[in-house]
Length: 306
Image (cartoon, rainbow, N blue to C red; front, side, top):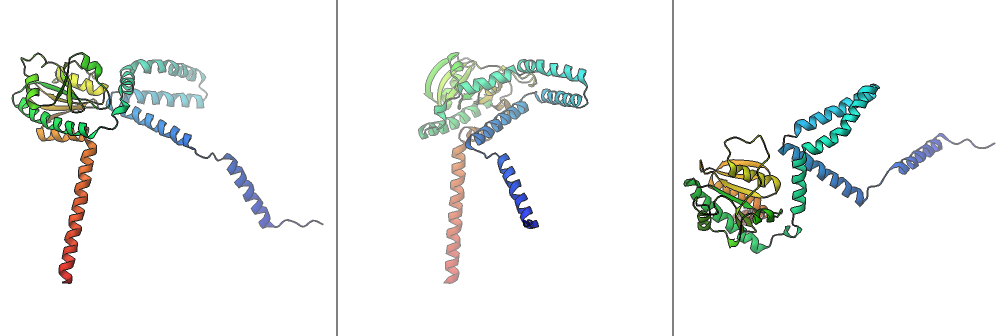
């Protein structure tokens, strides 16, 4: 007569069986899965940031509401309503492409104009850019006092060759006196924008695309709208002086910061154009402070021991 299996053996066999079943269903993550998730997270982040910078939040809520209504109608077997909503969603994709055409075009332009060779800026160019920021702040201080309109575009990763072609090509260092002469209201290039690439002026009298944002304040003139438009289509940093009020503004990513003091202008330009250097200087100061405190503490310990 065969021996009956013990209860402990049956439980162990059950656990082993469950582990084998679980092992067959578990999918191990590979490098391709990590890259896939990273790309999707990046695209979702870009979509969220695009919705925050535009008026597409209400449209997104409407799309979510339609999806919710479609799910409810499918769950309760409302065939007619479900069919109509499905057709609406199919044509809604085409409608969304039309509605978000400016944003889609802006995204594709930024992707196409990005220069991979400019990811790492040489130290010489960084020093020239540092000097350009100082000279720009000096010039804008004087232009603000005299209420002389000015428009400067600091190029970053997105190339601005199309805008440079609309003006006069130059190749010179940024100088405060030169900027004041360019933006003098009787100068031939004062109406356009000065474009700065890697700390050097590469174009003057350049035309910039106007902003398509219909919610901009009516107080903003053509110079401000052009500056905001350039910051919408590219990752450039645009510095503006109002001809009417003399106030200084900076446009970044389609957002305009107005009524800036010269000190604030310099700090903002350095944070946007030289972020790594600012971090390096802060880290150096932190390390130096720690060393000084450590040396001071050792000196006090030595005095106490003596």
